[in-house]
Amino acid sequence: MNFFTPVQLRILKTSWIPVLIVCMIQKGADTIFPSMLSLSLGTQYAIFLALATMGMVVWEAVIKKDVKQFGILAFVTLLAFGLQFVLNEFLKANSSQQSTSLIYYFNSFTVFLVIIITRFYLNGMSDKIGAAVLAAVIYFVIPKTGSPTGEVPVGWLYPHQFWIDVVTSLAFLLTTFGTFISYYSIIFLTENSFRWPAFFIKLQSRIQTVSGWEYFFIFLAIWFVYMGSIGELSYLMASFFDGTTLPVVLTAFIIFKLLLAVLCIYSLAGLLRNIITGRALTTGTYNPWVIIMHYIPVVNIVAVLKLLLARDKRATQEEHAVLYLESDRYAAQQTMIISGITVTVYNIYHLLTAPTGLALSGAGLLGGLYLLKIFGYIKLRSSKTYLLLVIGLNIVTILFALNEYLMSSLAFLYLYYFLMLELFYPRLEIEDTMKVQEPEAGDIFTHTA
Image (cartoon, rainbow, N blue to C red):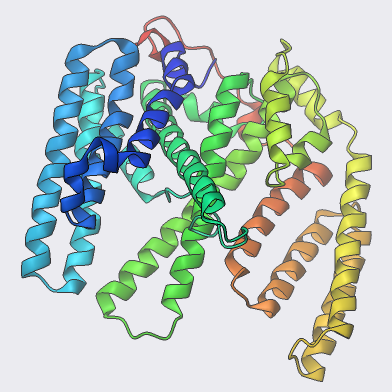
């Protein structure tokens, strides 16, 4: 069984085309639409967002060569964004800033909800409202930057405008591509899960069969959203604790968005582990080093390409389970233990030699925690209790630092926890032991959607 239909995969594989078109329009907007220069920046942004979203949602109709669907989706998208712009301008002139910001947020959600309901209706979904609401909520709440800093990281560059422009353009290209992939992954996975009730059992299992391209697009979508969630969480936490007194409604709204970002991080870490493990088993060679590489930014590009290009090896679910449980992880385990101890020893050295601003009692407590962490690493292979001890001590020592990297450190530590579980305590869950039948004729894989 597959996660995507052949048509859905073709849409994902060709999504770079509308992404490239959108980026070219954005880069040359002044030349292509010179009349836009007379408009306000807010109006220019609204127009560009409407056109970019239209390009994203109609690409499915282009691949299917469905002129009717293309026309309806284009019309609905432009109409929804047009009505949203008119309403926002009216509110800007006649409402308080506090209520306006909240209404802007829900107006934007309504736009995407209308577009996605239309999309599901055109593709013959029987439960179009339920599927559309779920897909719209998921897509709308996910961050769209894909950056753990929440912004384009150009500050470290040599301050030459040319290189800043290059990196900014590249970042826009990658975030646009990530947004497109995330949109279609959410739409297709939601649609398939509604049309085939057993679909999510496969998604929750780590010993499932995952084809190369399915793994590639799902991994990209998860990694993009996870990194964006880190940036969103960091920004919201900074806004929440910056000392500015906010109205109760806005405070509640920030807390609401904080919880959504935490939910994204909580739910996606396990799914990321499942997809990586499932693809590794599908290739017939479970390599713990490749699994580790997936969790290291930039280095994971090599790991993704390796699993994407590797050939599938036909095997049963039982054979995958045996390979998963019996794979040799000893060398990787020892490496992770040594690495953890090395980093902790460096932290102790830094504590003893660098000014930290801690009182003697605080420094002594922190040093004791570091020594306890080393003990936890040494005993890591003995019991899962020591893994929980190491993770707990890492959380405490990160909180001691209390700097601008707090949220990103905790989010990556959460990924680290799942990685360490895979390396030291692999086991099967209930979803791994359930038999998932292939879809019958007339099920989701006969649909064009």
